[in-house]
Length: 297
Image (cartoon, rainbow, N blue to C red):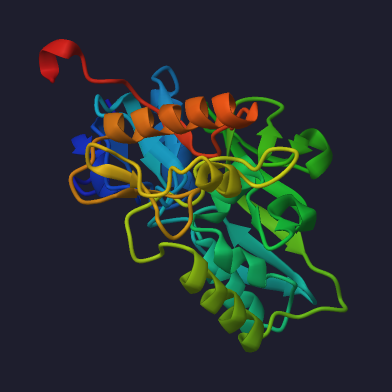
């Protein structure tokens, strides 16, 4: 059996403590590695168990029944950013997207200000090709360092993945450890640009409330938030969750929401938008874990 210090390997850890929506049941085992070797050793000893990866806990809805097997969190580790050459840097998966934007401004590389609009980790951004303000994460990725379920480390390039809008298909089950990013020589990230984007987010998004970021992908034509608003759903509530009155593509935990409330609201929005506009909204947020059984409700 793999033994680690108590604060690194926890049993029945509530995932509501580790997600931006502040909902989610317990993980059988919750593991925070100290470094690559730590992570590799853990995977080698536990690869036969179900493994779920968790970054900053944004863009994910963990159901009330929790997650069986092991949840590995990189939020407190693997979070370094290093400049390697002009306009090139190595970013570890646990670093936040905001940290990358600030690093880029400090080191005069760019265009990376858009990362300040992604509420999550670089690992999560790589998983879903996250983007904002017209840019996407993989636009700037030269290579990636990944680890497989048996703890083996591999080095891959973008051609090894199938990439599209908010979607990345992997060549095999893996998790990102770091990526090498190269930005154009002609552009830098400036303080004024970061401030402008921050002010725009404050004006248009419910940043002070408990959300996961954008819930739905934008359809081919139009924006998800516009369809939801036109359907008259701003402010609509189920239990302790509601559609933000500031931006309709955000769902807010008003303080006492359950995962079931949020998932029911997601499904209701999809149903109404489909019936009114014949538009099928796909979730950008990942929904994982088990629902509570009737006897446990």
